[in-house]
Each structure stands twice: as structure tokens, then as C-alpha cells.
Image 1: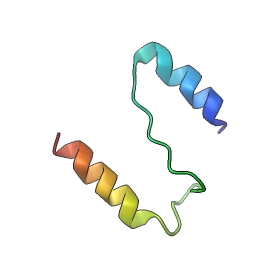
Image 2 (image 1 turned 180 degrees about the horizontal axis):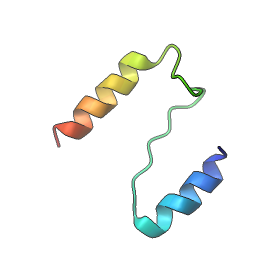
Image 3 (image 1 turned 30 degrees about the vertical axis):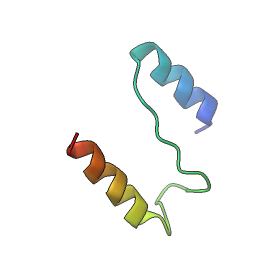
Amino acid sequence: MPLAAVMDWARPQMLPVTVIPGVEHFFHGQLTLLKHLVVRHLHT
């Protein structure tokens, strides 16, 4: 999905968007980073 479309959807709802450049559908090679971001979000 194009990033612009995501931003257009999130903006009216004031939802934060986290972008991990170069990552595709299954987060290959970035699962540790994704886990860190989710855990950090859950602790806030």
C-alpha cells in the first residue's frame, strides 16, 4: 500500500504512523526491530 494512502487514512484520525524503510509484508530481517517497537508502545 502506498505510504501516501496510509497517511491520508491516518491523518484525520490523528493516528501515529511508524515507517520502517525497506520492509515488506512479512518484515523479513526486521522482526527484532518490530518486536522492540511493539513492546515499547505497550509499555507507554
